[in-house]
Image (tube, rainbow, N blue to C red; front, side, top):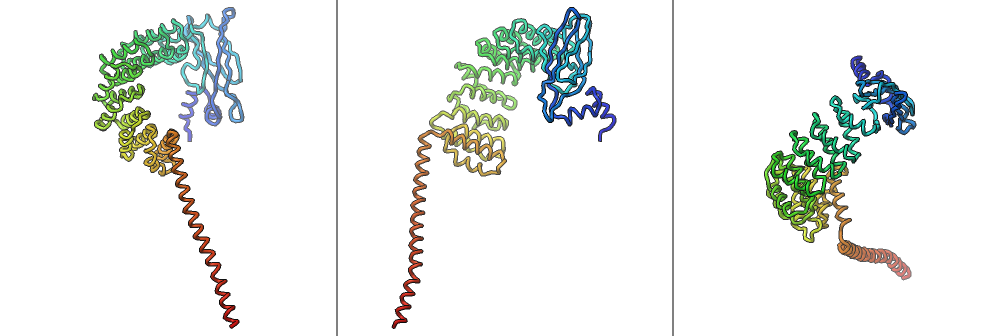
Length: 436
């Protein structure tokens, strides 16, 4: 039962009556999808918003009826104007003293709706600099990530280095990576010295998204100067994209290093996998064999997967296959599932017999799902010569079964004939006796 206090809270937060809220957002299918366009008429000093409910209407989806707050900011200050949205398409006009610098829809984020609103770049830049609206700055960063002009890059760089909220700085870093121009790279390189480790980690990660000598040099510098293992891990993954001799040496060093939850070794294994170089097979197998206890279950499982991936094109896979099969019955489910999946990746048909044992598990079990997938992958990846050999073996087996079946059939036929002939002989003997 809903109390009066709960009713009051719902009405206050939603801006509508309790019954109206539940009629539309609980019992009514879907949610509003709004497409909004803005226009300023200097002559009449009217701001115009055209709002369209774009959700596909049907038997279970209808038009919504709800209040929407529009906030205008400019030289006149900040003004909130409520409107009631209820039609498929509507135009709303707002008299203002001067053209607004910022237009924000649902500024307090209370409406359960998807809103598509693309204000002009000048408005987004102003919104990006609004110190009193962190949500507005985040939304502005998201929309600016689709633009590539130099002014946008400069403003995002400014937010990355000066915004009081670390979340905005993180999103600004991501936006620069998304823009992916030379100017965006330079902005990230110039912003690598971040006091907040959370932001610094994202900058290192986003720099790793560029394939440039300057980005590589920045990652190497991070490996030399950084102490935070989370940030070091991002730099290790970043250098994995470069086929340089010093990268090979660095990855081997971090593979055998000690760190909290073995994070650095995990990152090195991920980089080795991305390099797809079989030269890492022996040291990786050695590290997994000797340092299993240092890994988390997830990290060790990823190590098994990387080992199989690196060995998938090798002619001789016996050592790797036997190593992986040694974990098929591991007491930790995550590890023995990783071993099953890794055998599928390895591509060695000799593992099929063992994997088929797990394919007899309960139908919905993770073991059976993984085993079925692994066996299917192994069979699909068999070489034609293997398929021919298997087909030949199957034909020979069928021929043998056919011969045995034919022999049994011949024996049965003879028995039936013999059984049918016995009564006739007996009858003939009886007739002869009667004549005598």
